[in-house]
Image 1 (spheres, rainbow, N blue to C red):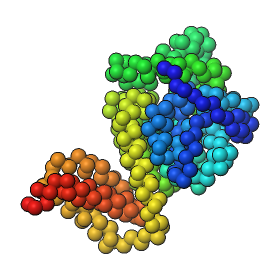
Image 2: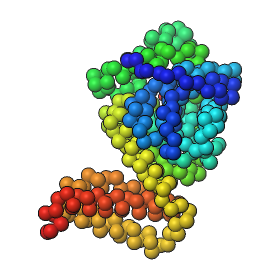
Image 3: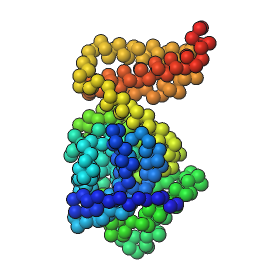
Image 4: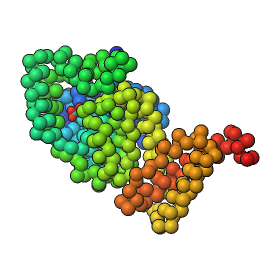
Length: 359
Ligand code: MLT
């Protein structure tokens, strides 16, 4: 599969970084960070989907795609520094970061070290742990096996682990596309990145400090960063949303792009309305108003279940697992928006089906 790549470059630290950018002004900036050993083109289905509403940017991490390798030793910390340098070069103060796997490691490191530069996070098929000693050893061994067996072999073996079994019949073009990305990554960069991945530090202990909206997405059949890892992050990140993507392995954005994009769209709409809402910090949340919003949600939910079960599917969006005590202001705001979205959905439905209103 040939993805049309406009090779725009910009100087960042000691490198020329290659990126794509729709350059739309006055809208939230969404930066996509690819996994290993891929490049920015892995986001083509998201770049085209969101290009009319957001400023969408994807870039090649150091040593991948068309970005230079530079002279420094690769680390995830360095990749996060490169990302911030890239944002500086583009004069982007804050962005929503969407990272898959290694891209998620980079996004988590960036928000840990530079929280003021991140206004939302999408963590896709990723994890917050460091490599176990066994995983480290496996990575270092794979350097030797690539030297022995060659890149074609490595691309084949990787594809088997990356994709859900069903994708080998339904997503054959994607599989070829991913293998191509792997084959287009230099062996030197692969070795250096394997080293970087094996020495990365954990970010699980930092998750509680995250104060921005977070969406966690993971392929149901992801063998590399399985759903349990996402579940653990979801339980720790206050107010985060978790969606498991069916029919997908580790590359959920490619294997089930429809579901991935739907979830991403809903989350981005939430963030956009949050940023337009009166500053969350200014919303005083008394016990009473929290109870009030909960009882409003309960009432409208019962109304929908009892009288309009055909709308019940929208109830699944309820952000049920938000720990109230951690950040009541954000919780309140999310609940209030949830109530308002149900209310306006119901009103719209009643307008379109007037026979119900008369009952
Ligand atoms: C990735 O997709 O970025 C890699 O699977 C990450 C890893 O090997 O830890």
